[in-house]
Picture 1 (cartoon, rainbow, N blue to C red):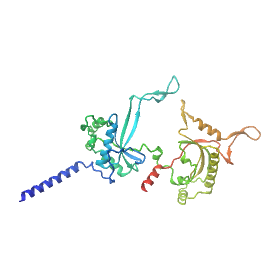
Picture 2 (cartoon, one colour; picture 1 turned 60 degrees about the horizontal axis):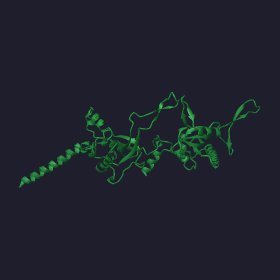
Picture 3 (tube, rainbow, N blue to C red; picture 1 turned 45 degrees about the horizontal axis):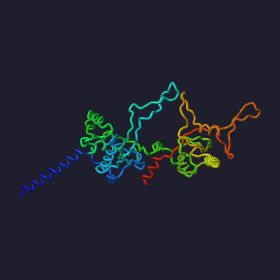
Picture 4 (tube, rainbow, N blue to C red; picture 1 turned 30 degrees about the vertical axis):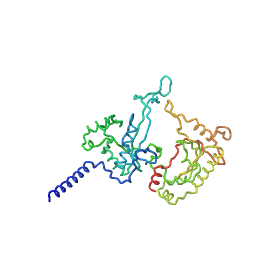
Amino acid sequence: MRFPTLCLFLLSFTLLADVAVSRADNRWTSFIPFRKSVEADASARYDLTEEHGPWLILAASFAGEGGEQQAHELVLELRREFNLSAYVNHKEFDFTEPIEGKTIDRYTGDWAKMKYANYSKFDGYAVLVGDFEKSDDPDLQKTLEKIKYLRPKCLDSSNREEGTSQWLAGFRKNMQRLNGDPAKRQRGPMASAFVTRNPNLPTEFFAPGGLDPFVVELNSRVEHSLLDNPGRYTVKVASFGGKNTMNSKEIDELERSGKVTDKLEIAADKAHRLTVALRQRGVEAYEFHDRTESIVAVGSFDSYGEPRVDGKIEIHPQIHKIMQMYGASRRELPGGASLGLQPRTLAGITFDVQPMPVEVPRRSIAADYARSSSR
């Protein structure tokens, strides 16, 4: 009998058509960039760490009562339903403490103390999608666009009696509804997602390029390298010139051969011997070598001074002490008619006439991450 066969055919066709329509309507809910299946254990914590890539997508943020639970639910749904490596980053926000303003208190002469207008203290929970190596990674851009159109069930406030703890959810929904672009009006509750840095990584990670590999290699086997200085600033007390070249062919040859000039070797030897001599005296000394010179630095500091009322900088007392300790001393010139500057020495090696505070150079941590990821 043909009737059952015809019915079966029509039913199959209808089901296929429904699947096709469903796929067309939910084109943004499929995750195109290939990734291995990610874990989605309801009992596990997926807290963001420095190992989850330097670049991430901030998908949504929550605050206040219920924020932690809703962030956890979103992470699980992004992992389970969309195969995205999602994590939670917790941060405390305290707007109850006074802060130093940008004006001077006319009664005390100190920087004026000010208070936040929104006097409050709360916990914030950000949900981020991670494991991206570069900010211009094509997969990152594709994933960002898809996240903006996703509609996770846990973010549907109509399913919650207590409402949502998503930050500015109502405001963003209204702004999206008023948007003149029809495509943007189709976006979901994560329409404001954006690319951001991993807050667990140091600022220097994101410095463009950092030191070039040739200079890093010159300092790779130095015991007391300035690259290992924990502070942001130090005091350069001695510098020794090597070969100063701006010729691109000579620079290429240096990098290709890995060799250094005789002058650079002499400069590096002086810097090393002076660093060792200072260390033997219990001084926190470091050495650093680049294409043009070698230097010796003393100390590690988070800042080099504090701003004064007149706009100038009050040098950090310890930095000032180091500058005086290793700077040239005044001596009478022959004949006693005037004074001159006598550079100080140690182990037969001369310090600079005027030590200066300098910023500590940093390795290209991002480049190191890229190399380790590729391996």
